[in-house]
Structure formats: structure tokens, C-alpha cells
View 1 (tube, rainbow, N blue to C red):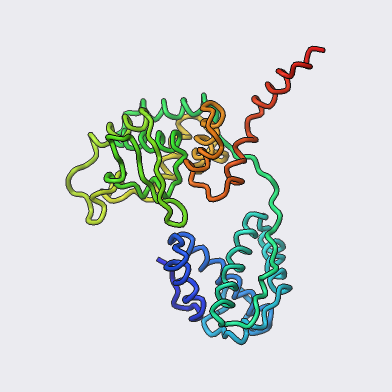
View 2: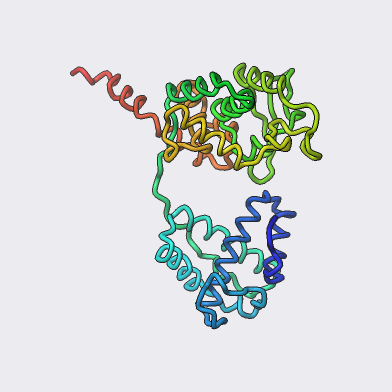
Length: 323
């Protein structure tokens, strides 16, 4: 639940707009609220609108549109520098916050709430290319083997969770949101709701179907909390499993498999699935983009650069290599 009571009215109008018109997910709206709250508190301090020196304690409720009209591009740059200098914010973090500011001012300008858009020429902080971390094929098999060999009452559930992550490249929020009715067992496919509330189809292989069926055979059938009756994965409290619980499950399984939990996480399992499909499955980059639910193919292209073995082999196989 997002706390908007102390927001200025125009910020809450923007959040309503992003949720209803732009169809952004609750998590995205929550991020907008957090990012813009911090930005507006800094602006009040930076422009001398408040006497409060502790930025975290500044109340933005009474910030006016007249004061918003005074914000310039230089003020926004000053905020991004503040994030870097005070919090050592990484380029990716600053890029996200710049994107929040950009869409916010675009809304205010289009609605005629302010006269000019100070973020119109705001550039995105340059991002260095980061290679995704992922489990090797052997480590992936080891992780699944450890989960499958456990003598635990949640063994089937936890194994099914890992199997979906490693075979489908599914996001955490997508896995938690799966309902039993979303699975078409006759066609071996699953419909999930991804970023931006976009629906996509994921085709399930034999390992996924077997793992899901194994879990469904032991999944509780009575006592399930109201509202969670159709959820695929249930917690010990017999309600839809939470993000945090899934993260805890994955961390514990990684530890049991002797894998570094500082290096690997739920999201790294998504990277692992994508990398293994590209490396061993000869998957077309466009098909991989569709499967992962990436809006831009540039996001998917990182997986075309992670396989150093293929690059090495390509050089070794050059017909001029032995001359």
C-alpha cells in the first residue's frame, strides 16, 4: 500500500494517471512515489522553500505549482549530483530516478499545471555495460538436485519454484502471481502478467509440467485463506506466497547447494535461464526477447555477449587459424 497522505495533490494526480492511463504496475507506481518524494524534498531544500536542514524530514505536502514552475534543468542536475555525492548512487539508480522525473514533468506540462518542462532535455546517465551473473549448467543441475533430494514438507513446492525460474526465465513477481487457471495443461503453456501489466505466454517443458503436477498433488486443498484459493504457490499460512518468502527459499536452496548467495539471487536465476537457452538451445534473439518479456531487444542482447566459450571457439575455428 502506497502512503500518499502527505503528498501534494498534483503528485497524487500523477500517480493516479500512471496507474490508470499508463497502466503501470503497483510496484512501478510505488517506485515513482518514492523517487519523486525524495526529489521534491531535495528541491524544497535546494530552493530554500523550507528551513528544515534534514532532507528526510521535509514535508512536501504544501509544495505549490508556482514553486514547481521555478525548477530548472540545473536544479535536476544538482539533485542527481546529490545522489551521487551523498549516497554513491550507481548510474542505473540515477537513470531510473531521471526517468521518473522526466515522465513526471511531462505529465505536469501536458496537463497545463506548469508552463515549461525543465526535464525536456534531461539526459539519461550513461550506463556502463554489465555482464549478467548466472549459474553454469552444472551448478543449475546441482541446485535442482539438492532441492529434489530434500526430506522436507515443502520439497515439491520449492522444487517447482526453482524449476520454473531456471527453465522459463520468469520474474519473481510473475511467479508469485501465477494462478492455477493460468496454466493450460492440454497445451503445456502458462499465461503470466509481466511489467506494465502486459500478458504473455510461456511454454512449459516436460520438467516444468512434471514439477507443477508433483506439487499440485500435495498442495493443500482445504483451509486456504480467502483470496488465495486459486494461487498456485501457497505459503505455510495457506495464502499466496510472498516475494520475500520466495527470495528466502531460493537463498536457502543456494546455500544447501554450496553456491554463493552474495553472487546469486532470484533475479540471477532469470539470467541463468536466458543464458542457458541462448547458449545451448540455439534460441533466436527475438524469440528470447518474447519469452523474457523484454520491451526492448537491447535488454535481451546482453545474453548474446556472455558466452566467452562460443567466442573462443569462433576464433579457433577460423580457417586461417592454422596458417
